[in-house]
Length: 360
Image (cartoon, rainbow, N blue to C red):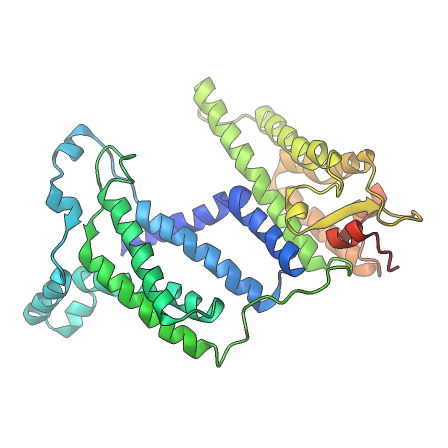
């Protein structure tokens, strides 16, 4: 059970780390295709992303200590099992020897049980989200399971010094059974849950506070990835054990300057990575043309208010300043926050900016 807990924690970490290369562009695609990313369809779609990262984590982790002794001690039987239903025979033997109560909490049973359970969501998504038949569920379950087992049996296709996980034909069988069971559940869910498929809507209304908040969350997550990498490289190069306050501030402020000022200054929508993902544009307020892009000095002002103190104080600063931003936004009919007022900017959707429609 401890191994499963460790692998699930890796799945959560993958979900965060893959934001910059997968999640943020994926959210942007949802807004571009459907004009919205909210409600039940968004929850189901986010669940698919988390499930996909979980598959990666359970396939690859935890990694062993690849010593010469470890690899030399591995034989073919340690990473390949081709006898069908061997695991079920083990469960039956354990049941005869120990009884039902002990069997249900034993490793031999839980291994089979979780192999089934782990593929149930795949079948559910095939039937409920994508409205596909049982044949597709069967092919998807077999294909994904075969990919996982081959990856494990070959040591990540030869990238690892030696195979360290077991490729078991029984896993292929139980995974496929789980996918088919999930498909049956997914068909039933069609009758009791809302349709999870997004419907295209016009995206011309002012962006909601929830949408802007999602943009901020993605901004922070994207910002943390290069900051963390640069800090690790710095520690490796300098041989130090921790980042000093000065280095911490310089790295954080430099990364945020590039992400929130330099790159947006060359974009027509003046958006940082998170705002670009939710497809909103920063424009000048108090102008006859509300779709006119914000001035570069406005980006600098917003950076000074939000990101420079954040680079020094971290979340201790960002949390209260975002609360202040929200309070100011709630008090105003136009939803503008404190940084919007100081920088003389406001937000509109990308679709509205591109069409030039002024609905004030």
